[in-house]
Image (cartoon, rainbow, N blue to C red; front, side, top):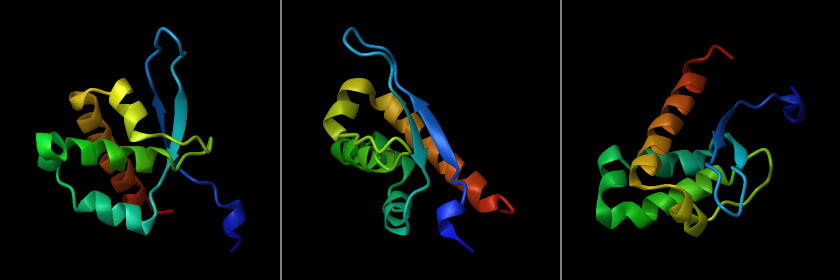
Length: 106
């Protein structure tokens, strides 16, 4: 088994266009075990909780930075790009993405 040849699954995210930048698209890879553990320790209620909002953007940036394009995504940039509803949608979709991979026979 050569891990260099494994075709990785990814979740594509396209951000909206702004006045200064065309909508960026990244292909987010599956999380590492450490990232997955952090993610599963944060419930959906935590994402919407105003006290944990900064933590949510930081965690989303970490997850999104693991992408095929090797693009670093910062929490500060995400705060400008995504509102609270969108960051919550990201976590919901990302959990679904991971669940599909875990349930896949390969």
